[in-house]
Amino acid sequence: MANRYVSDSRTIILCTLPANVDMTTSDGLQMARSVDPKGIRTIGVITKIDIMDKGTSAKRMIEGKDVNLRMGFVGIKNRSQQDIIDRITVKAAQEKEELYFNTHPIYSTMP
Image (cartoon, rainbow, N blue to C red):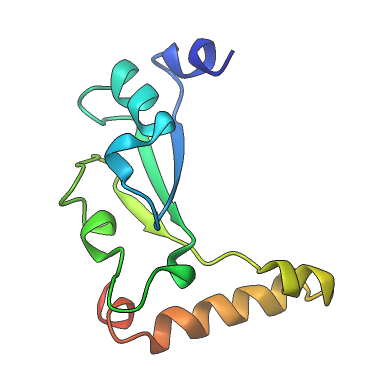
């Protein structure tokens, strides 16, 4: 069913990938690349950046050095399960996400 939607050349593909796995083996990215081989209408969203192993980062992914997409990649930090249990508001979660990226030694140097 997803293939039917992404095959339409008028569709923008929002391809969500976890940062803590090898992006080249992602089923979603493989599907997007099969219908959009030049990456012209695909936007990559890198999730789970905050739970990557110490000493690693998603910088190469976000910069498009591993997979090039014309619309690029964006990194996000979602609410944790504990945040959901604690009923952290979306606004508070956005503030935590902004603080995370603004103070991270690697991501704070990126646009």
